[in-house]
Amino acid sequence: MSVVQKTGPSSKWYLPGIVVGLGITIRHLFQNLMNPKKMPTINYPEEKYEYGPRFKGNHVLTVKKDGSLRCTACMLCATNCPAQCITIVASEHNDPTVEKFPINYEIDMLRCVFCGFCEEACPVDAIRMGPEWQTPGLNGSQFNYDIERLAYRSNLKGGVLSIVDDDERHKSGI
Ligand code: SF4
Ligand code: SF4
Image 1 (cartoon, helix red, strand yellow):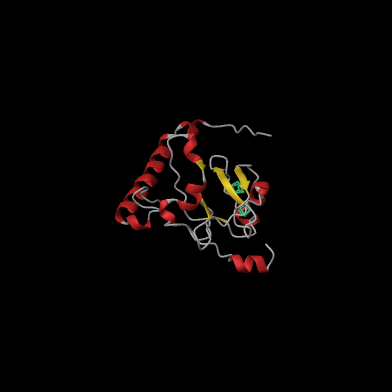
Image 2: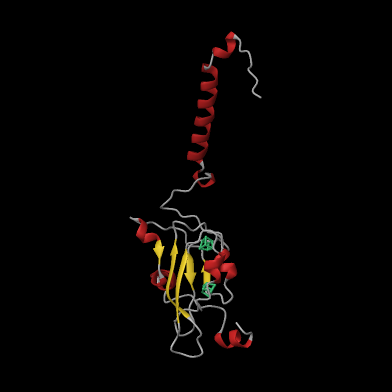
């Protein structure tokens, strides 16, 4: 229910309100100029906000000690993904101790909602979400992250080592 308030002739004098508003703006302007470090904003892109280590940013596929992918193509992450943005193509490995591995692993970052369910579903620490969040691109195809980008992009410096060791993994049956 909306209430219609009757307004008197004095309410038509909006000029005092504008003057008070301008006064507040000018006060903040001078406060910020005198003490820029206390400003609640940052000068992006010159200054960048550092998120905490638990921030769920861009995905990383982890690697084993030999540099190959940790992922066993079990599909748990893709099944758990609410946005259905993970595509995995699995293949058998030549090494009989490796049950399966992904020949294609793609995440459509434009559909991803950064919920972290893929990371939580993975039983072998093969996918993580890191603090990286700047993802510029010139067209939609640049947001389809493949294995090369997820595991071996230059800022990962050869790949992020999975904390799950092969021997330990086989001992615990995963
Ligand atoms: S963060 Fe969420 S939406 Fe994005 S790929 Fe993982 S499960 Fe899917
Ligand atoms: S849950 Fe982990 S091991 Fe399984 S397909 Fe996803 S990233 Fe690979």
